[in-house]
Image (tube, rainbow, N blue to C red):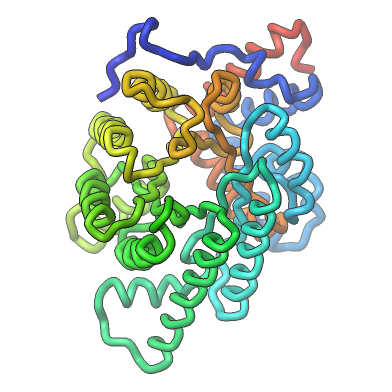
Length: 400
């Protein structure tokens, strides 16, 4: 449960829009204002995503419209090089970039190898830039979901499936080994519960190999699942016993509706907490646990929740941990919660933005999720809209 911190215990406030939008020109700020004013309306989002999908299916020329609206807000570009301007702009404000190759929906060996090659390029880019503190990948970008499900169910594998799984493990190890050799930390993103078990197994195997000196490989912990806090504590004990540092990215979670629907349809116990209060409680408890065991854990808080960020900052102060302690990071998505990211960075904390990139039609599923999440998450679009509106007023300019 989130109990408000007294003002004298809050190391950083998030209301200063002059800091949050300092990097945006008046024109860019107006565009942000109008985009979130539209995304604040569920009916508009639903109609818009329907017609975008239809237009792309019919090969209608709408990519430029997507590029200058939602793509520009939430993505760095179509290639790594396209992201350079965003990387520099964020870096000038003391914020790092996490390049996230956000191509989805591919499901064959050639595409898995191509995605692996692209992620290797992001690792190389990170190794050459002080403004890129992490790389990231999703196992399902380099592996068959169907095969991962089968492995998690412990079904018998055919000879060809066993060979395919060996190739998956090879890709994962290639990425983590390259990260280790170039001294780049790498996140393994969390996914749905019916494949998360095998993802965990692969990730912990990589941690045992590459996290002996410090955290290189990070697993992702979705605290909206009721068993995750205990899993985090168990992972810490295993890491300590085996002599490696646990890397953990703490998130609330991204598949809530899908998880609930599948549990209902397949008549098994829903793995999601019964209330937001329970999720918040476990998330903040995970912050406590990690900071209290920071000698053996490195963490990144992937959250847009203002209270959790303030809670972590206050806990760091209580434990006399430096704001620039390289074992503790905060991260938000590009185009969202700039009031959190930029104010944290100004106060001296380690902050990074997830910067998705890829061909427009290939990252469309990601963009549609951003639009839908902003309308479904309580207050998210309204908050972004009101922040932009407040900054327009502060600058004394109209929204037109």
